[in-house]
Length: 260
Image 1 (cartoon, rainbow, N blue to C red):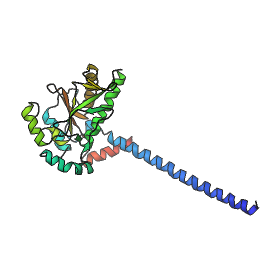
Image 2: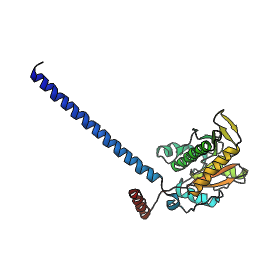
Image 3: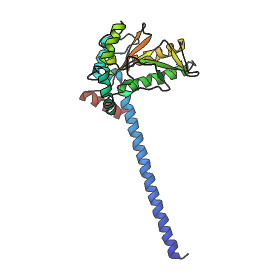
């Protein structure tokens, strides 16, 4: 091989090396930027609910929030216009899903949906996040206490005014005006749980203790409102949204992120 060809190859290798180094540098910078964005997003999502819940709430260890409190948060954060009828729901749900107003809730490793007869498996995105956090903490609690592996069961979610009216005639606990109308509220059974090992439904003192502990903790953090409905053997839970909606709170949130 001539000296001229060797020189040309040498230059070519240098150019290839420079290009590869440049691409690696871009990739590293992009990863750094992505990590920083994820950190900021996490901090925003980890908003202080006690300080910045966008409807009145104070910490409590009691699971006895009144219907009025549930409605206050539901009307503030949920659907602006509840579905009048089942037909109304069917005609609008695809549009609501497309615009991320409502999110479908499906079985997963945390919970199972019981057969729904008077509600639809949809919630606002913040309520789905709350539900998944309950599930995650529930599994942590089971592991920590060395209890059996269970999934809790969901018995009711979004309702139309039509189905709510039918329930209010049959069930004394079901009022005509319910937080379930707004997609912010879910009922979780404590009557029985799904045994994840053998896929059977069974009552469980351990499951009740673990689920109750999680809800007490999250209620004290103002992440949710909850009342224990003994007649229906369920926890009636409404999401508390932490989304500062005025300039002063937004400035405080931004300052908190920067200081951290």
